[in-house]
Length: 466
Image (cartoon, rainbow, N blue to C red; front, side, top):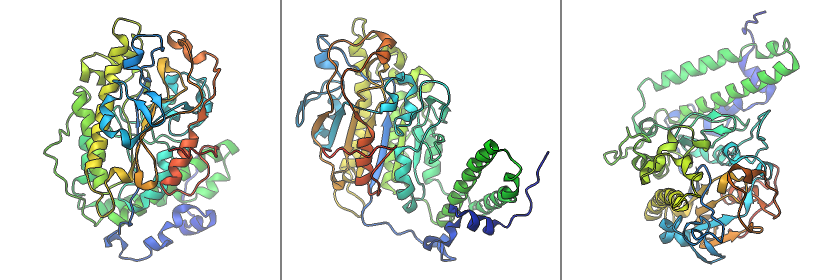
């Protein structure tokens, strides 16, 4: 039976459900001239950028001759530590960063590393197979607050683009319902969205979007009464998506008559693809820098690659003379294997370092210190050696105006002794040492970013050492 959606009064529906569609009644939307009003910047800006590298990092056993030069984690501890060649490009930023070891998501520790990119910023129990349900990601928790002050709530990017598949994510970002947010992977589309003049028909397009949303909401309540309980849940989730879309439309009205920032683009190759990996990665980092500098957004994620050697991101190792990236992780026992894998991770460290250095060299617009002092950068992977979902390799950088202390290597729990089982057997091995929940760090990050919370993903711990 087909049910026609026709008769429900939209505003009564909104008041009756108490949902966020009442946003036009808020102070920020109260004036009829708000679409042409300027949006004042707060005195202190705080930014968050998160980066994901797939397939883990080099972790040769201590007895291996490659350990001294090519083990990703530094040697030493506390403030007395030394980078290996994997992180050597960050040497000039040593006092601006903290390396963290011994952190992982408890729900993922016995899941193969190739299935864990999905939960890197969520900590959700997505399992290794079967039913799949994710939760909101760290960046989107912050974006819900910071996004009210900028044209775009967040910038979601990846080398492969889109969402990927369950346990094969090509995006780091998940909304409040745990749905993946599609990532953009074409530099020109990102640049055009941020900086190319809006269409003169933008207001008309927003009006059409509003009308379409109104039509979707008509008679939703009466339709719900005809559905099974399972279908009612599905409808509720769908309507939440509609409400979220209307919130975005209402927000867009605030900006439609404000000119986009003008930035030079002569130095950018906006048509570059991952087949020119060094230029591509550098361009993606540059777009985040420009988005932050112009205050187009204060939240960004960039997934450098998808797990398991799937997609265009597997070409990134060509930047340092290798054919495919994932292949390097399975050839570490061959002559020069650790060095090859380490050379690739050093390349990623270099590009990350160049991005951070640019923020450090840029005075905070209208604020104190540099852009790096007011930007928190989080870089890492949800797996370590041999796709092991433990001891995540993590770097926290910047944010010193938020109270973060750097120039240290923090090791939590015990470092596993001896050599890990070969190949993919490692993730099934017993864990005979303790690690802390990564969400402890996330709670601390959110608090310093100004989000009033004492938990993330059901975890209430913090890391006061950072």
